[in-house]
Amino acid sequence: MAQPPPPTVIDKPDEIGRLQATFQDKDFSAHGSTWDALWKDAYTPWDRQGPSMALNDVLMAAAQDDDPAAAGLFPALHSSHDTTAAAKRPKALVPGCGRGHDVLLLSAFGYDVTGLDTSATALREAAENARATGDDPVYVPRVGIAAAKGSLTWLVADFFDSAWSSDLVAAEGGYDLIFDYTFFVALPIEARPKWAKRMAELLKPGTGRLVCLEWPLTKPPSTGGPPWGVTADAYAAHLGHPGEEIPYNKDGYVAVAAPSSSSSAGLKQLGRFKPTRTHKAGYDADGRITDFISVWGRP
Image 1 (tube, rainbow, N blue to C red):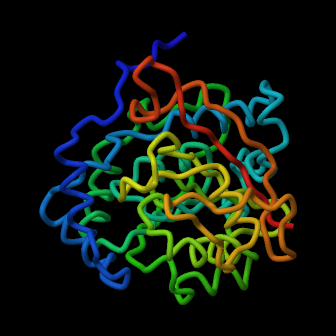
Image 2 (image 1 turned 45 degrees about the horizontal axis):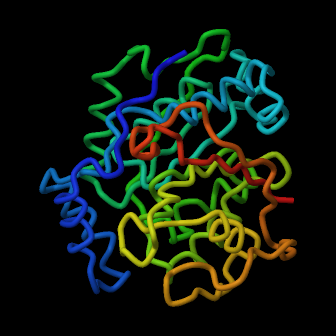
């Protein structure tokens, strides 16, 4: 069994401080250009330098049907094994994809993947990353997976603007899989209702899956962001009631327990579990994993 990385809470406290200071009191309308400026300045402390092994492991378990927690969660994944029908390959989206590590991983599982970011600089680096890695085994963990690689699309766009996605949603109903790791936690609380609404709009009804790698769950939201500290209640409250304002207390936590039922437009949580591996930022000082994966569907 692979050993966890050395325990860590924050890798570079001085850099995290600079990141938060950059966004301090900045209007949300200016966040997109601010992220792009950081990419241009080659300041990217959020970059994981590789794909999410937590995402890899849950998809691998689902593809091989060898994990009860993941069984049946990704019905579109098996259609990616049909190498004769590329047009029928499932579609995936990674918003805020940065250098595209997780875009490349999803492509290895047979998804046609769109990596979306507001920064053209980030996507130029993502395209170079794709060329440089090629068949690097880190990005092709496909033991027992018969899928041909899916296509890659790099798109400079605002996640919250429906113009870039309207044709796909109209033609196919939405994406088969959306992966959110560091995107949700980069948004201030005021943007979370819009985030949930867009996720509901972009996810294919019935078989579509939103995968959230919940992090940082141990960081108090009152310490600021990005990344903003999050809780399971925050994901559940917003995704269960997309577009609706959710009350928070003065410490940055959802003010009431997550609603037991979703609104008619809400997403349903299909599973939530702790991954067996994750990025080193998802371990506590004692070497224990603190991240969780939650999987959501749209009725």
